[in-house]
Amino acid sequence: MYESERGRQRYAGEDRPQDLVALEPPPLPEPDEDTQEVPAVVFFAARASTPELHVAYRALEIWLLEAPSLPHERELAWRMHHALERELERRVRESIWPRGEEEALPF
Image (tube, rainbow, N blue to C red; front, side, top):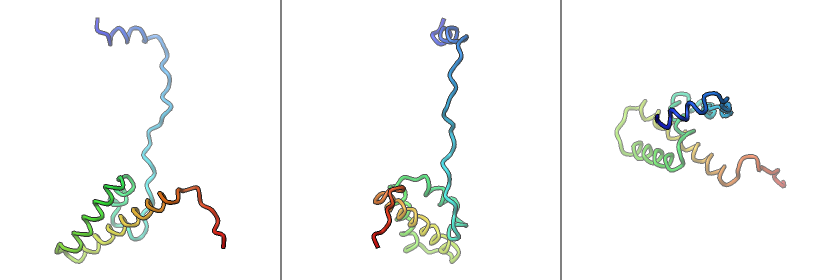
């Protein structure tokens, strides 16, 4: 008899504890008017690590400066670039001043 069969027979009559963890995806940020056409970038920015964001930001910046592109491609790329830039800035601000620890300004 295999060990898995023995285990199955041994615990067949016992009630198993219910799993208390519900797996749900984290909430997505609402896209603003600048990112309406680039929901994939908003999705990526919400889940990417900071080094991944830096790499994507720099690659897009280099592509915008050096690669020939059509006007509508360039406009969309700038919107993507700004979306990544805002997410990087938000993460830097949050790392300096964590959310929930705000204080009133003295003036």
